[in-house]
Amino acid sequence: MARQSPIKKFVRQVLGCTCPDKVFEQIEDKHVAPAVSPHTRVITIGGRLLIYIWEANEPGQFKEKLPAMLAAGRKERNERGLNRFRAVLATDETNQNIAAEAALYFSQFAGRDDRMHLHVVPQNALSDL
Image 1 (cartoon, rainbow, N blue to C red):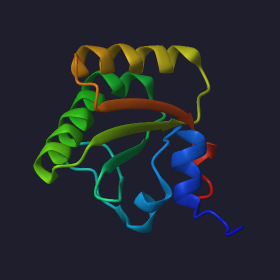
Image 2: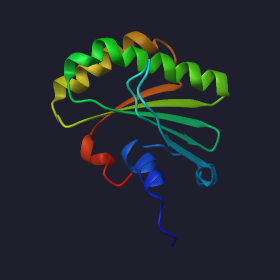
Image 3: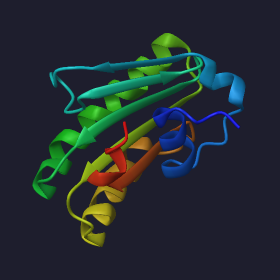
């Protein structure tokens, strides 16, 4: 059996994506400088899935910066005609309060948009990427 790429492994095992194997034949991965949004990495898979990764360690940042990341991701997803947007918040903290706070801001922003998802993961989940 062929070894999974680190991105495919992350998307499947950490984010729980069930995209078919064919989708992973086309992966775009780029590091970006935070501008309007705090994310520093953009991964696009198979012309369907958009992933923003933000390595955040200060919970106080969420209220202001998470909505900016969600807005940028939704806009890019829609402009590029992609199916889904997954916002990944990686933090050193394994504190449930951080996940709960981020989930609250996400639910207020996303509303009924079921093509957006938030994942709060430990920073070490990114170690193989």
